[in-house]
Image (tube, rainbow, N blue to C red; front, side, top):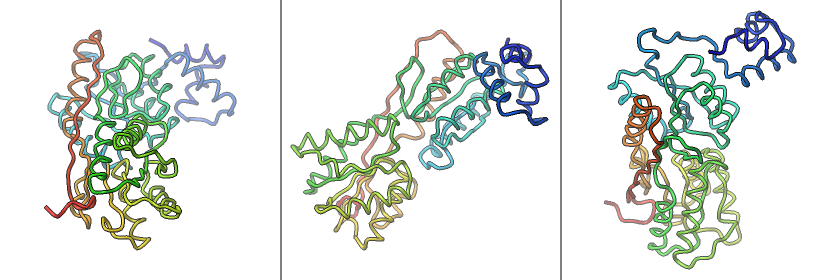
Length: 333
C-alpha cells in the first residue's frame, strides 16, 4: 500500500509538507505543491478518507461521477442507480464532473479518497487520466452512457440508428431541409447521434449541408443561440433534430423568441424524453432512453464485477423508443 512517506520520497520533500498540501493545513509554495501533486499521481496514493471495514474489506459505497446537476437525463438514471444499489446494501456517493476533464479527475480523486468499492462514470470527452487514476487504485469503473474504447464494463443506449429514425420521421412529414443541434464535442453520444443524423439524410438521398449541423454544447443557452444561427441562413431549415433534452429547452425558447410556431413554422424532434415533454405546447416528439433499465443494468454489471474481478468486461447497448407527439407535425393523440 502506498503511504504518505512514499509520496514524500517521490517528490523529494518531507512527510509534513505532503500532509500540508493534501490537508491544506498550512500554505505551501506553488512549485512545491505541484511536485507533491505530481508524486501523488505517479504513485497512485489515496489519502485516507473513510477507513475500509476490517471485516468486509470495503465501505459498501459506490462513487458515481456524472454531470447530474446540469443534465435532467442523468438525474433520472441516477434514481434507478441509487434504488438498485440500496437494494443490494450499498450507499451512493455522488460527485458532479460538469463534463470537464479536469473536474472529472478531481471528482474521481475525491471518491477514491473515500475508499469506494467501485465507480460509475459518465465520462467526459477526455476521460483517460480519470480512468488511469482509478486503475492505479485498483478500483473498478463501470462506464455509463458515453461508451469508450477501453476494456471496461459499459452500459449505454443505441444512438446512431435512433437518430436516423428521427430524421426518417421528419422526412415522412415532407421535410428535406433538416437541421441538427448537436451536443458537446468529443462525447461518444454526440458523435454517434451526428452519425445517425447524416445516415438518416443519406438514406433518403438528401445531401448533407454543413451549415445545418450546429453545435449546442449540451447547453440550453448555446442551443438557443444555435437556433438563431439557423434562422439567419439564406435558406433556413424547416425541421430540426435536437441532440439532448436540455438543448431542447433552449431550442424551443429560441424558436419562440423568433416568433415561430412549432410545428407549423418549424418541426422539432429531440433525443431524450423527460417527464415534462408532454407539458410543452406543442407536446414534444422524442426518442426516449430506458433510464430505469440503464441504471439497473449499470448496477448489475457493477455487482458482478465486484463478485468476480477477473470476469471478461461486458458492453451493453439498450434500445430506445420513439414517442410521437405534436412537435413533429403528428396530430394530437
